[in-house]
Each structure stands twice: as structure tokens, then as C-alpha cells.
Length: 282
Image 1 (tube, rainbow, N blue to C red):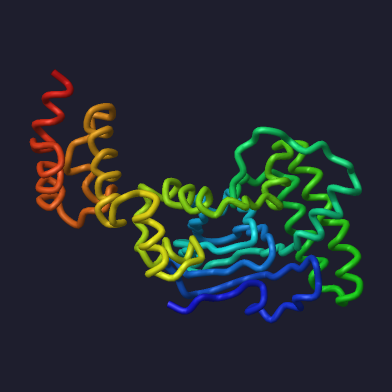
Image 2: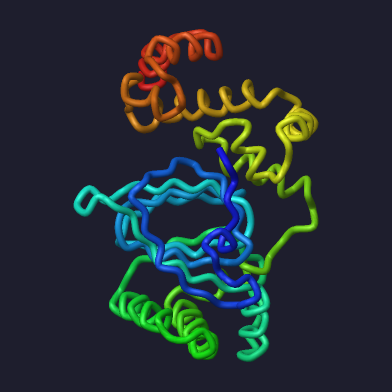
């Protein structure tokens, strides 16, 4: 699948720091490889969206919207069952805009916080009106848009800081210099997501061959064996603590059929999932 670069491939002007694009589609995409060259609000209007980043993933409907840090991600877009199309109002902004905003308001840097590459928020009346307002701005001449969108950017940031705190703002600028730590975080954050080696390589910004070498160096195992072990360990947790039946969970942990799951489980634990569940709940 071709990698797309946004907002560049939406015919936007990359020299503009803040942009709005009303995106509509009648075609679904699944785990499209996307390089975001700017930070992005995705104000979902119709359909469903799923994203995977290096250290976070979300699946949302049109009651929610996302804030995504620039970088590599996998993106799925599903059409609305009601209107049979997908629509998202995209609000792009640069790191320079974030720095300018922080300097203007002289915020204190948060300490000892966990940073993520994407955040999910729920709509409220204020946000819904905000989205309508930036759509109106997007119809104005470009010179006028530029000045108003700078103000609108401050508006949405000040509002979200007020209701959600400031951590998300600094997460946009956070970038660890420790490449090994970043790689390990990418793997562990996606250990239960059903991603291919190629998809994980993309999130890690590596070729497949480099990814495999790095993986074996850090985890002392091949990717396929390590991920299978992680999913089987998770299945054991579900059987023990959630009272799930084997037939309820085999697809969730990445097996195409129940018999393959039972066989893999028995190889790892020495007993079948049903026997394990009976033993743990005795």
C-alpha cells in the first residue's frame, strides 16, 4: 500500500502554519500508512476512524475527535452506516505554532508526565461550534484565513487546556533522543494490536530488515514468536480473570480459528485453554 503524506497530498500550501481541510470520502481505507508533516486535529463528522501510533492507538466514532502529533501512523476510515460516506474536518498546525503559543502564554512545563502521540476528546457544544466556525473561515480569502486561523488555534488550545489540562500540549513537542527507548515503547504499546511486521516497521520508521534486527537485539526473540507469546499470555489472563470462553477470545488475540488457538495454547502452557480455566478457577 502506498504511503501518503499529509497535508501535502491534499494540495495544501505547506508554507502556511495553520490550515483547514474539509475531507470527504466514499472509499474505506484500512491501516493506510500515513506520514503527518504537521500536528492535526481530526474532527470526525461521519463514519469511524482508527489510528495506530508508536505509543498509542484509538478507535472513535463521530462523538469524538482526535489530536494527532506529526509523525508516522496507520489510519483506518470506515463509512457511516447512515450516510454511506466518511467526513472529517482536518485542522493542521505546525510545531512553530505550538511554540509561539507557549511563549505567548508562558505556561509552566509539566513534570513527570507520560506523553502520547495521539489524544481522544469528546465533543461538546463549544467544540461543535468551533468546528462550524473554522469551516466558515476556510471559505474566506487565503490572507484573511491566515490571520483568523491563528486566533482560532489559540481558542481551541486554551479551551482544551482549561477542560483537559496541559499535558497534551507539551506532548506535541516531546521527542525522545533515546532511539532504543522509543523502539521498545512502540513494540510494547502495540503488543496486543494485530499489526503486521511491515506495519510495525513503518511505525518505527525502519525498513523491515532493520526492524527485525533491532527487535532481536532488544527482545532476544523473533517478532513472530514474541508477539505470539504476548497474546497467549493475554489469553491466559482473560481465561483466568474475565471468565471468557476460549471461543470468545481466539479472534481477539489474532487466531483465525479456535483449533489453532487451542493448539498454540497447549504448546505454551501444557494444557488446553479449557483445562487451564478449570484449574485456575478451582
